[in-house]
Image (cartoon, chains in turn orange, green):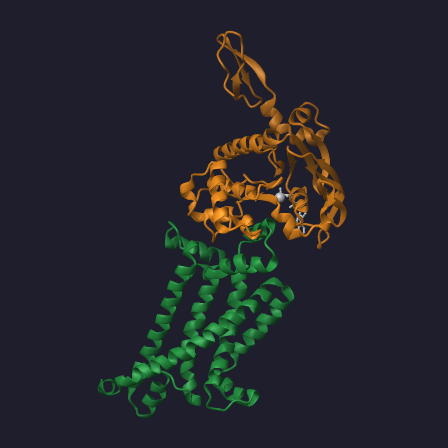
Length: 278
Length: 233
Ligand SMILES: Nc1ncnc2c1ncn2[C@@H]1O[C@H](COP(=O)(O)OP(=O)(O)OP(=O)(O)O)[C@@H](O)[C@H]1O
Ligand SMILES: [Mg+2]
């Protein structure tokens, strides 16, 4: 469990990025921090691996105040995946994935063996192992990024808008991949996005933030959709709502569900009908 | 032409001496400039101060420096060490700015990701920042190399032999062809070292090879972002 206790962060230039933030993040589930740009999501995420130290309050992992843990050691046991993958351009795919194990002293052969296995896990063809990152597509690079984040089999995986820079089709693919991985691995994932759809899809629990890292609402996707805490949430979820507020339309003998934008969302499953798409 | 037939045997000696005199300042200048450039890049305060200071060094006329160093350092006037030290100073002066630019050219996202993975500071500088600064460092080093090879010739005025000998000897004896030969050989030496550096860069930085993109695009983009130095590799 990760716990934020009354955490604030004021940067050297005076910006109060996070103001009195408290949250418990349950283990073995995906918590999504979602909010508009500048709401402090990245700052909060980076407090978990001490890339940012709070100016007030404490962050604890399994009851241990991480301010007492050596940052470099802490980071090596927490996976981190970021936008634009952050891969080391001068290292081949296999060496990128093996980076953290190599830092912690795992022999090269063993680290490479494990890296190849991880390529299978994230759905990358092993033939790409000897390539450099700039010889991969954006989606492939993100997969390498995820594999690298998983390399030391960390309990905690931090993901900062990992799919923000890939096209919608690949993004959807990667999101499914994360869902699959999470079913298999059951990590504690803290996922940052400003895409509410992505949050609803991936999050077991969603934390809606506004400026200063102030929590507006937490809950499951269903809870937030059904009962937005206030107008801000209603508006933030609004776009999604328009799409999600489905109504029925009869077409022939079938009932088709149409969303707020007039797009058919699917076919209502009736006794006589075949499987609806989904 | 006659001169060449009678004197070609002296060429290897001067060529080799010139090469020997060039390599040390280039290498030492490069190594010294790395920490200076890193500090200049890392700290705003040192940046202005350091780069101005180092830039001023480069404006000292070389002949003056050759003459000034011996009394300052207690070296004999005709010693090679004078020239070597003076050229190293110029090399550092030129290279420090390139090095600062080179460290500045490292993608901050990649640097952050190295931190996030648990690189310690030194290891990050050595294994991530230095290699990624490589292409811009190489561009700077090539300028330093060519400039140093050219400057070595001035040493002949304080008695340190090199291909520069053909300049002074040729003008004293009024043999333009001898001067011309000296110039061509100096240029060839500079080109050869430059070519070697390029090959070395390719061998050490296979990842930096322009992949499938067309070279022209690189230039246009480089000009657009003002990062011409990055394209020159
Ligand atoms: N190193 C820094 N120094 C000063 N201010 C900073 C720093 N990092 C972030 N901030 C400021 O803190 C606030 C929160 O930034 P943060 O990066 O956490 O937002 P975010 O929610 O991740 O936004 P985005 O969706 O754009 O990534 C912003 O106002 C930002 O300008
Ligand atoms: Mg962010």
